[in-house]
Structures are given as structure tokens and as C-alpha cells.
Image (cartoon, rainbow, N blue to C red; front, side, top):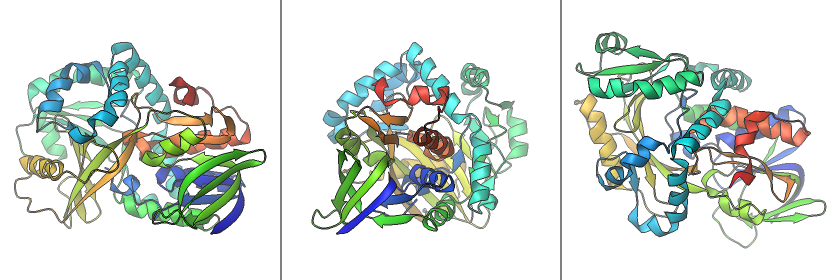
Length: 420
């Protein structure tokens, strides 16, 4: 049995938990990090690597709402629901439909834009602090449109992003070919997000971030299963790293930050917060190659995945599958990623590896960042969906401000737990 006391316990060692822990350490706090797995090796490792300051659009929009029946029934859709998980997903889906209505989607986009403001600059600072500046690549990001009609239809949405402060250029087919000559000719055009940054090795960046935290913080490899408020703080109990209930963890902390990603809902409920968190299952496949086929991330928008040029390999990551935490990976989703990649690069052979991870998603595409309704000795910081890597530094700043008693400003208003 691990019995310890600390000033602040951070539950969760993904990119959000690690970044929060580093920020708190740098501000002089005593921190213990709790996670059953290797720090940074969940969805924080397997993502597209994009610092997506341009991604102001929520998942739920009027366009998605209109297309939802065909999206869910099509086998080629970038959005899928595992039918076995549908009963448990029904409450989340009803909220998602409500958040897809015009007024709600516009409000959610404004909230996302506030959280994304300055994301690239915050990551520049974070990378320097962990000696990972060489992993950051500032070459922008592309949205690819496969027909001229799709390109033209996208202009209204791109104008909405411009109104929220996103820098984007429109590229015709010739300019796109000049920029990325390995792409097959015949595409309708592209949106080029000029200021976007990406990580060419997310796993390595997570390793550097974890190392920086572990230099000054205690890391307990255990599963936090029970959380109890007491007059002098919060007690966290749990099993071993394998989930056993005998032995394991007994940690007393003055403050607790719940940043356990897709595994946060149960702990938040024990703190008194009923948060409609559910899980998107993300996939990637990778091909090893000395030089990736693209020089910057590129998303074929109709297919819902990213081409991600990384150190020594090309990663193809994405799609949205709603299916909870327990069902096995879907071979069909992997096959669709491979098929989609070969539509652009026909010479790709079998992938060298494949992966599935869990994204913590809320119906309005905004995270929960703020004090628990039961008291600010518990801080919630989860539900970042597709934008956990991008939003990690601003989340850390908000949490640090809350713990110090400072007002984090209006950026935190859209993320309050009481909105549900």
C-alpha cells in the first residue's frame, strides 16, 4: 500500500495532466502524479500531432446535424457508432444533437476559439522548457478538398474561422501541387492554415514532458478508483497499476486535479459533478519511410483523417468512432484509414503498425476546466476531445490560476462544470 501526503495530486499523466503538473511545479507547488500507465502514452502519443489553433469548429454543427443519418449509416463515413454501445451512448447523443443546433454551435465555436488563442506560442514556450523545440515544426496545415464544388462550399465555414481570428489562405490546384508535389493532381483546392504548428514526434515530446515533471514530482503508477472529500483535503484510493483493489494507493492531498481524460467521469461523479463525458475512439496507422510523402499535416476533409508527416514515418490518424472504453478495436476503421491513404498514395504497402486510443469527448466539444461544484479543493480538467494536445498549455495556465486564487478570465467561462 502506497501511503503518501502531498499538496496537490494530479490524476492523469496524459498531455493535459503532465502539462498541469509541470506548470504547478514551476510555480513552487508540491505535486504527486497518479496514473496506471506510462506517462504520455495514451491518446497523447497516438494523435495527429497538430497544434490546431485553426480548429475552431465544434464536432456538432448544423451541417453535421443535417447529414447525421447518412453519416451513421454509411460504411465509409468518418463518423461511426458501435451499435453495441448505443444504449449507453443515447444520453450523450441527445445532448450532442442539441449542441449541433445553430445558436449552440456558434456559441461553442466562440468558446473553442478563446481556448485556442495563442496555442502555437504557448507550445513554443512549453517545448523550450522541456528541451523539445526541435520537435515543433511551423509549416502550417492543409485541408484538402477533392472536388472544386467541395472547395467552393467550404468558403463559408472558412470565413467563420477567419471571423474568429484564424489565418487561412485559399489554394487552387496549381498552388497546392507546388506546395505538395507528391499529391496526385486533380484535387479541387485546399485551405492553408499558415500559422499552424505540429509535432513531428508526439511520443518523444511526451517523453520529454514526463521527464521534466518526474525530475521534481513523485509519480505513482496506480489506478485512482475512489475519491473522498475530508475536512483537511481529499483522499484518493485505488488499486495497483493492474487495477487490483487490494493494496495499491492511499494518497492524501490538499487539492486534487482530475485530468484523467476518458477515465475522468467516475472520479468527477464521486466529487459531486455529473459530467456527460463519453469516449471517441481514435485510430492511426503508420508507414515507415525515410522521408514522409508530405511536408506538413494534411486533412482530406471528406474522409475525416489526417496525413501526419513524422520523424521516419507517415502517420494516418483520425475518424470518429463512438464506442466506449471496453469494446475491442474495429478492424473496419483501420481498413478505412488504409484505403483512404491509398486513394492519395496508391503505392503504399501494408502499414507497419496500427493503434487505437480514447479521446475524452463532451457533447459541445468544449472541455471542463474549473472547480468542482462541491468545492475548489477538486479541480476538473478533462474532456478536450480532438484538441487535448493543442489545449494542454492553456488548460495548465487556467488550473494554475484557479489554485493560486487568481481569476483566469473569460477564457474559463465556457468551460465551467456547471454548464451541464
